Length: 194
Ligand SMILES: [Zn+2]
Ligand SMILES: [Zn+2]
Image 1 (cartoon, protein in one colour):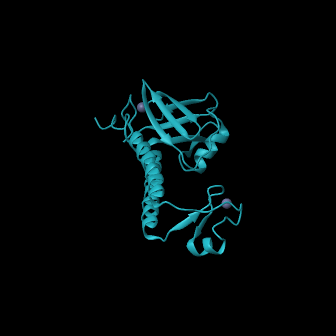
Image 2 (cartoon, rainbow, N blue to C red; image 1 turned 90 degrees about the vertical axis):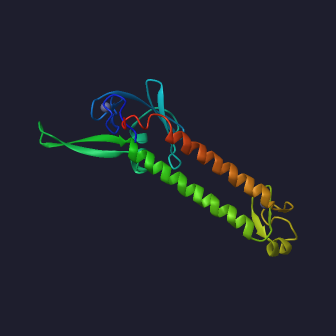
Image 3 (tube, protein in one colour; image 1 turned 30 degrees about the horizontal axis):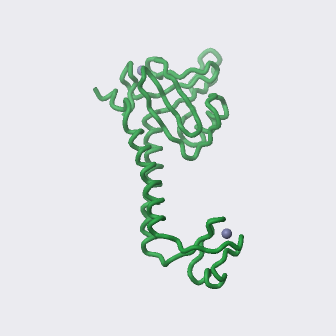
């Protein structure tokens, strides 16, 4: 689990959008929170936790309302309402529970790896296919014959799809995902276990 480096409790980052600042919800220790493209890094004392958001498009590292909303929509942060005793209404706070976020992302990666495993099984079991190098259209043998081995979209010659190449492509995608998973599992996740 991901624990706060100071108080060792499970790390929930309170997001203050006005400053912006990112603090442990238990002890108010400050953390750095960096967003760049689809990577998020939480930093403290040279220790990093990296997250990879596959279904999130973040164009820069300015932390703003739009990015908070994107993170919220994708299920990575929650909105917590607390009673404001002075005005008898509720304050809203944005909180990122790092353990939940990590589990979400691991689950997404594992699903993707499973899909890739199925894909490589299909490459082995299906008939020879033909593809167009220009537009990536894929034809089965019958359709390739009907089209005289040319692409119906761009008229280029069709080429037999090489199963070994397909497997290599799938394996390199899998390796990328596995490396990201490994990064996600390293860092200071066990700080709270001690
Ligand atoms: Zn703390
Ligand atoms: Zn084509």
